[in-house]
Image (spheres, rainbow, N blue to C red):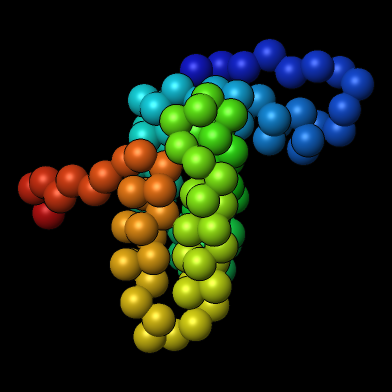
Amino acid sequence: MKAVVLATNESTSDRWFEALVESLQDPEEAIACLAVLLEETEDDPTVRDRAFVRAMVAVTEGQIAAGRCSEAARDALQQFEQGLATPGSGIIYAWVAWLRAIGFGLVIQQGQA
């Protein structure tokens, strides 16, 4: 992902997130961000899930700001977040619905064992 320059009059966390959202307006950047997080091997699933959802929020906001998807993408994200907290909820289907809502898709390819 490309480097971003941050303003100095906001908190570091706010500036970082705003810069991330701006960079994720580029679909290639958004895809790269999600792909990296899917490869994450964090041992604590709670930390991993929070990081992934935070990235999903940034991707959603970036794609909405770029005019590539509608506000309905936020609803799809909310459904995903609710499903994440509910065992047996079919969370993967909510995730695929979110991907579709932001104009992305899912490709399965052979990986390395």
